[in-house]
Length: 388
Image: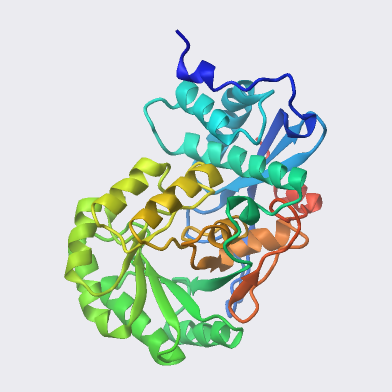
């Protein structure tokens, strides 16, 4: 009797070489970024641990290449997984057969649905496969996903802890002047605790007025009591969402927090597959689901998460950065909403791609170029590479 993994193998006889996987090349990179109003560059692209990321290329038998990227979580292990474990499994498969590829990887490498390295590596592969598919049929990935819209709103993640209160307010006004209608601050990292976070949120609200969306992101770092105290202190600030407030994305505790506050709760950006995202939805832990294609297994898994959210009448929004990839999700799917214009991760896009779109009046218009629509600057790829 055939196993599921054997049944998933495609028939190779009539496959177009332009779509057949021949090779995977992946490497680790690092970058320093310039943050507006700060005099010195910051190592990495966000928090202290965000110093390295993975760039991946998938090449077909006809020489067509697609690209994918993922973030800072064990990047060297991600590269090794792509080269040593995933490539031998998927070589010769058709990039359009995303269910077959995912099935093969799941059953051979991840039958117990673990996350982390395997999800990040699969994200790189999957994004690159969709890029190749789009190039082969002259459609954007957003178009392949469903083509819901051409333009997506973008919010600016700018509220880094390096800013004092006055610089924070000045930076907020700067980004509003540049056209952004939404701003996000990092919380739960200041030595002053939730009280200092509350002061920072109020400073930004006073600086930009009532017509700008303000989001806050704790990156899992609060316990339930601290998160409730912050919510209580800023409920009158009209917060658009509180992102990943609690340790481990504890769905039960997030549900309790959501019931105790009027502030909408968002989460899911670094969850590695649909079952973790389903838990957030089914336990009523979130108002906004945040699948990120660079961490959860790519567009194939993100599409499933988006459809799950649709069934519960929930919007999806981009958290966790990597807007040049996630903008296709938000544009392609019916319930797509905001893209995160994370200033640190945007610096990577500006360095790596010659034609990356930028928001105009707080909105990104996707290019009509096929696939991801991005042209790689290989000089930047070489100059930022971390030698093994």
